Length: 305
Image 1 (cartoon, helix red, strand yellow):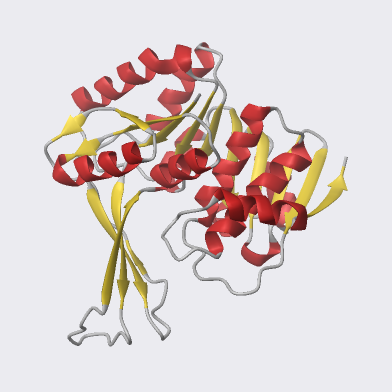
Image 2 (cartoon, rainbow, N blue to C red):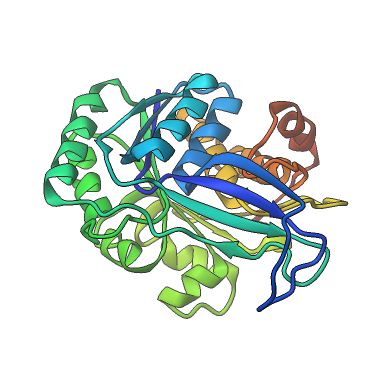
């Protein structure tokens, strides 16, 4: 069983325009609605990989209820505090001009200390049933910046491995501890610490995690563990959208870890999941048939061992 933590779930909206004109009225051509938030994306990808998944989140109002409903429809167990203030809405523009892939990210509901305590308690209650944990995404307003670090302490005491994907102050606080795995893209890492290249970033990140994953778009994945560094990539023709591909990559890494895969096979599954997202029109969604098709086409190279 895998536990996924999404502190700030969302309703993700694809907003289609024929053309977007700034500072003018724009008529929407089509709207598509999906359950979202990075952790939700990870949970959905894991479920498509046929993993058993529990999703722990703060669920806000009617929006939170809708997200839970969509996740439960595919077999994800949803737990966590329910609050009155609405879960956020995030927008991704799809246009035929330079504004395509523009994202507008909602803020999320305010979380007080009592609600955080309820979250911690539910986390503790389910740990005995869990093999591995994935933490992904932003924190909602008023949530303490060391929130993920506190969860790591609880998990470490219980002997449960945790993977992390977040940025900003929550990441800085989280790096006080040592994680089973951390995924960042190369630009996110450089916001923390200058690196001369992707390999250097992965090796630096290894100081804070057993598995360090650095991604850089078409350049692929650099996955490091102890003295071994793997580079994995795949050539794709048409890409519909890369939004959410990092979340799907994390899902692949976590699933591979739970299954006891080698480092190179972890990298292969992660990249295949990311690629499966890129060809899919649905926001942050993969199909297992695409993952299976891509697996043998992932190029694996050992850079050091």
